[in-house]
Length: 174
Image 1 (cartoon, rainbow, N blue to C red):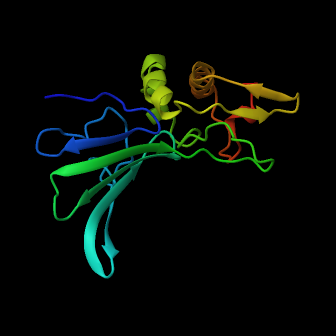
Image 2 (image 1 turned 90 degrees about the horizontal axis):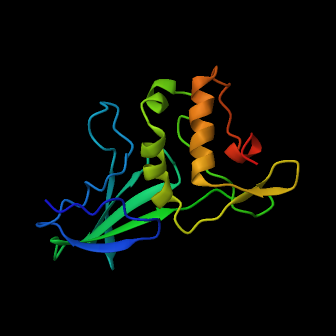
């Protein structure tokens, strides 16, 4: 079976659904409550009142701003257009905020199962083409995926912090 690897942020790919298992893309997507199946949302889009386009989308289980969206014509369901997109949060000042990760403080067991290499492998393509800087009180700082992964791993070996919705770059990354 041909496997595409992890498509980068911004990728738009056409697949033949009969020949390629495009959903097996190497990413970890949000699961349903049963924990076994991917939580995909489905919809049919209408043009002049006639259903003609089918769509489904799923959110990353690691980065809530990263999505995979799939579309196909109901007349020709064999060809699917798949779009990977990370829409990062925006700070009050209008700059792209550092990444906000799912469950960063709420589920330590989930985060402890990841190795540094696995996390870098998941995150790098999600943030392809995105440079982010954040104000950390000492000016503006840029940081890398490797720094982010290191901070995640360090924070989960320490006592968990109370859950907050603050940007990760407001901590020790800068």
